[in-house]
Amino acid sequence: MGYLSPPPMPAPVVVYKDVGGLVSDYEALTERYRRENREVRLHECRSACTLALSLPNVCVYPDAKVKFHQAYNAINREVDLGVSSQLFASYPTAVQARLGHLTREYRVLTGTELIALGMRNCEGGATMIASRKQRAPSTSVASARPDGQSGARLASFGDIAQKVQTAVAAALASTGGRTDPIHVVVADRQQPTGLAHGGEEANALPEPAPLPPRRPPSEAFAGQEMASLSPAYLRLISGAQPILGPQLVRTVASN
Image (cartoon, rainbow, N blue to C red; front, side):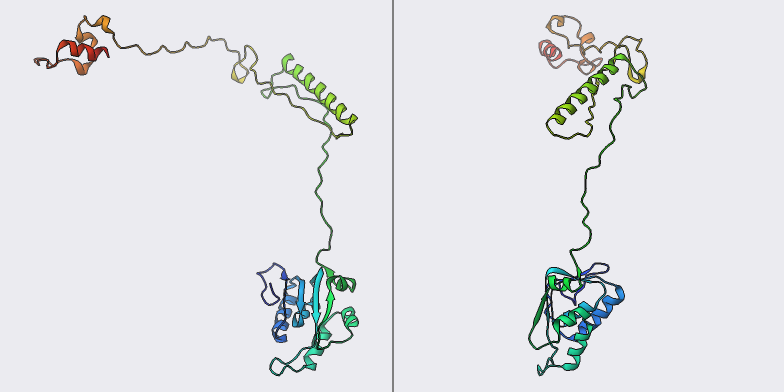
């Protein structure tokens, strides 16, 4: 990303490698960044890009390279002393003193050198390190049920949990392990005897299981009246004559 191709506001302008260009173009962008108070971060910056050092919100990385030289005419390649003077005057006083003057050849200052001269370090600032928050020691183990009921059964689980917590904490402390409280939770999944959902006593007996469906008639009932055993779709309409024989009808009915 170059100096002349900024991202949308308010993102900073990160200059990875800018080889310079027309001083007038860089002057226009520099004034825009100054109005916006845009942050400009320099990795490698050459020639007209060095105008970035005049911005109040500019920083350099320690491994950055900023290359200075005199401005020259793009057509005849001759040095333009007037523009070169404007470039030099835009640099901070400490940078001017270090350079002395501009030459036709590049003069390079590293990010470390510029930081020593008072330029802001892009990697500076306080570093926030996340740490685990110490919890307050637990003073008791709950022995009450969520529905408000209490009893000796649940209290005994609380005693067991307290004993397990104490034993584990002592074992870890003796081996140089963690010393903050260890919380043990014991879940009682069994419903107390005589209690139904909601804490009410279940006085009524459980409903009997439904009976299985009756099996279809077997061959033992083949001799009975077909009218009483056969389904409605096998019975003859009044006045009709059977087409299938009795043996076949009995087999279908029995199956």
